[in-house]
Length: 339
Image (cartoon, rainbow, N blue to C red):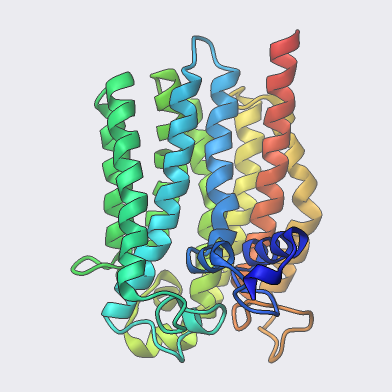
């Protein structure tokens, strides 16, 4: 089938798989589509945003920046995210958490359960990502210093501990904290440090502020999974808090992101164009209102990741707010470069 596809059709299939983490209507048309679905590449915008925040803050900081290091570091966190997705699917399958009736196999084809890849191929994908990341880490250690290894190994530990025994942080209500640390201080801080060789508090504060948004996506996903996780003894934070409190925490974190950006601009930890992210406020209002309502019995609009409902709402908001933040920081970086 793939041999009869035009390039335009391939691009359309890749775009659909990247946007939805699902194959297009005609199915898996080629290897690229397969691995976009298997790796859940559609969630990469959150990681790319973390990397670009670091890049743009470094570009406007005092002192030299090693752009080769920055490029390698951004590639490293993207590969680490892909490896994390594969590791989670492998581990959750091995411990019996992922089944054909669990949301992971319902909102998108499960790599193993749906027969997209074999377990051996999934492990091979993990090893390839980790091998490249190891090479990147060693290169950056040689070019910068051993603190790079600290960022990389801390990220690897949190990625492994999220689902793997014996810690299984997701199962004891610490998965959300794992994401907050990973998408904030580790990703943003690590990329910035690789380029600049320093890590000022302003960068850590901005990193933590942005990381609130990816954490809301995970909270939304765990709220979606409440009917499955609670009976199975998977004590995610929403299971511990209950649906009402978990929704309130998610709404509060969304609002806290904007308050944090405003505060950081006020103390000059972020440049004033970062306020462009406020352009996502109308979407924030709609998202918060939606979180205040019960989940519909059927999706009112086409939803390729159903039965997930709260997670996509949080993801779309995160993508919009993060994208506008990047545009603001980019505008400032261009202004600083040309003035």
